[in-house]
Image (cartoon, rainbow, N blue to C red; front, side, top):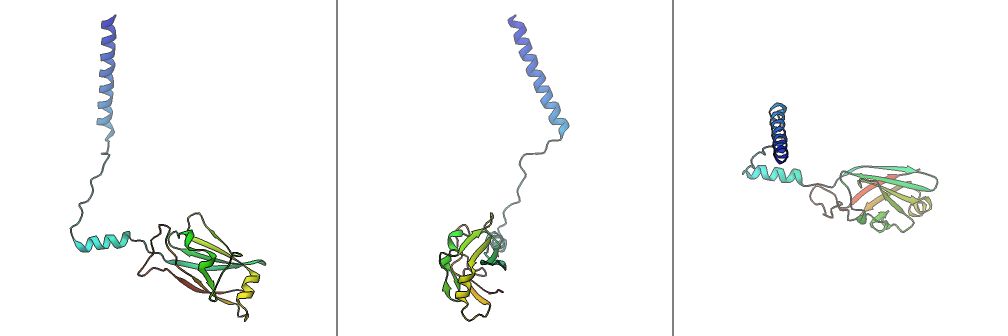
Length: 163
């Protein structure tokens, strides 16, 4: 009885090994890891790689929507913005900081900001009735908290026309 168990156990191990070998031969299995290209010693290549890796915060577009109750400023960036850096107190319209009557909402990605400004606040800020507003958003940073320099923006300025 013991010999039969040992034989069956050995036979099953043999079958398993045989099946494994046959499948790896016929499957044309690809290696799990691909060989990486060697790192270039050239300083120019390393600088180009660093520039590609560095993210630059930039304005993609601005738009407005107007309802009976509010003016909605829609500002779209190329990368997610830190929501803590865009607050009512960091937004100036005609050089006046906004107050808590303004609400700010971000899309899921964090690169689009909707600023809801009540129409009575707009009329107060545009006392001359020119229907144009100068918007300035101060100290904008990317979501990872790094302030962007060089060609990127930290302070955003644009003009809005409303009806």
